[in-house]
Length: 88
Image (cartoon, rainbow, N blue to C red; front, side):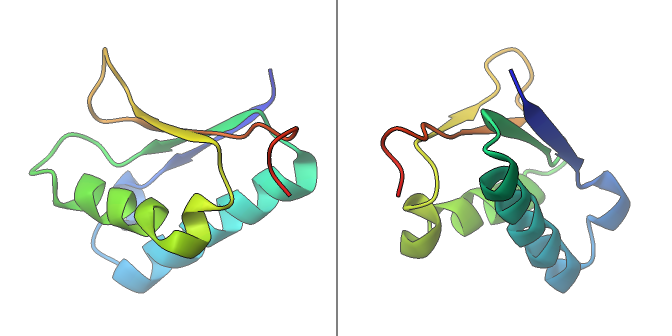
């Protein structure tokens, strides 16, 4: 399985940089045909996690991945899966 991980802890308070990093990791996933990416917003107050979920819920982003899961054992992780047979 090929994947990349993005830890948002170092940039938790830099909104524009967060969006840029999320766009970059999705672009990398597409370029490398990764199986999934793991985003680590951390537990905290939940605001950063909600920001990430809103980002991936945008119509243009939903078209780029197959499935989104919130870590069932660690709620501070979000997994974005790609099914290249179904994506264009």
